[in-house]
Length: 175
Image 1 (spheres, one colour):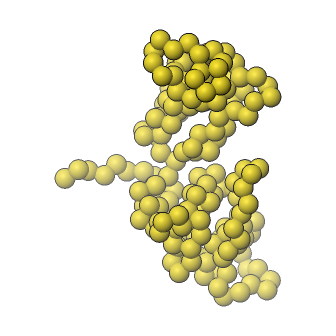
Image 2 (spheres, helix red, strand yellow):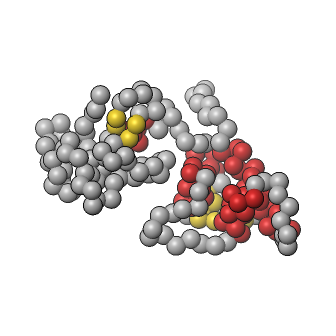
């Protein structure tokens, strides 16, 4: 089963139900993306679309979704506790204990578990990013030769954030 409401090449939503061509790239809706085109990437879970330009549904196995419907599906299937992460945000940065790092980079790491911001991104190497790298490489309980007390404290703070962010999501009541 397939739902078509967006371009499979660039992810742009259709302007109306009667639209037959993408207003951004000019391809017909439903046409498979050309092999030389970079496929759309979900801004919530950072997954790239499959070769057909669609995403597998998390709610209904076998259903293939375009980008806008995939993003909307994250309302019922969140990738982590973004409300909590927002409480740590200070502008474009996130404060974890006494350290701060770029918010988008920290969120990407929390969601994907990988320090990969894409081809065009330069990483800001500060203490939180170093702590994330060390956690990914050595784990939370590692004893690292030449370790600094500040690095250990940053790893502990990031480990605590990882555990809190990935707790099962429980909807909050509106009382």
